[in-house]
Image 1 (tube, rainbow over the protein chains, first blue to last red):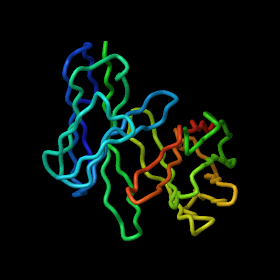
Image 2: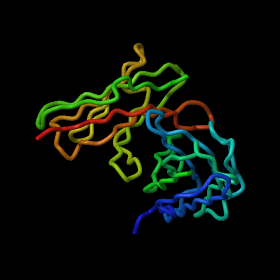
Image 3: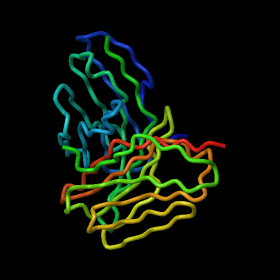
Length: 115
Length: 112
């Protein structure tokens, strides 16, 4: 079984709809992240959480919200989807090492299309 | 403003030859660098990393070189194999918040 899972894997929705993307992990990591990938723009951080009570905005948080329901679950919501939120969304987890570095482990991605 | 730059969007090499992927950065506070590999329809996977106190790190066919004075790092793959065909991302850490800053990626094609 995959360590980081994302549901759904693909979603097509209409402008104005509310969408939730879910992420679950079995790695036991405290840190979780949501990224989006657009062609030519690489990976951009939307939100991140270093533990259940910690939520932080990334570089492109406008139009998104998150919920850290448990250590293993981190969901991303689009309250009112718009076409420029069409992208590939990745969830990631990590654990800080003694060297102050945390390798991130990614889920398989969710392809979201907003019509 | 792109702090981590991968100026070559794509690279094509012959199987068995060396692949060299380059990455430049602008923030002198970056203290740890990572390379990730991404296949289509999959999430990125960690490949190799290097601390700013080193100038080289090797793991099998993969070697990362860091030139701090030039703010440049490179990933060498020797010998290249068709299974290495993927998008390679360079990323860097800086600051107490330890967020990763990502480059835009280089698509590597290794031809049989």
